[in-house]
Image (cartoon, rainbow, N blue to C red):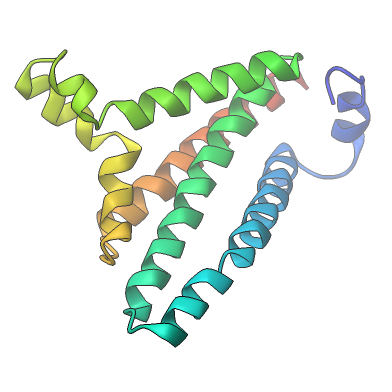
Length: 163
């Protein structure tokens, strides 16, 4: 909207900045949900031919949706900072990559053990691994939702500041 100069028109409508950001996030979450629903055929086929534990698969999908929600929040925030879509994409990719890599063996060799344990807790993989195991941990749900909420809040503040 900034690059095509439609942000002024969008902000002149009788809707709040919060509604704009939440509508964009819901649209992106819908696209993610459609993409994930297309992969449901794989576990359904495997359930037919073998004995898979269905709640574990559903917990994994819930984890992917929550992970996607937090990534959407981060990406929308970086999109609100800059006019250039490529720069917003690069900022998002770098931030998401760093949040993924902090919980891997890569940081175990670089950081001291105390720092690495603390930083690992704030990484995506630590919380996503609970869902992949089939465990719906309320701390992980809260982590992903709060990450989305904070990034959405920062996006709304950035939009209000411009308006």
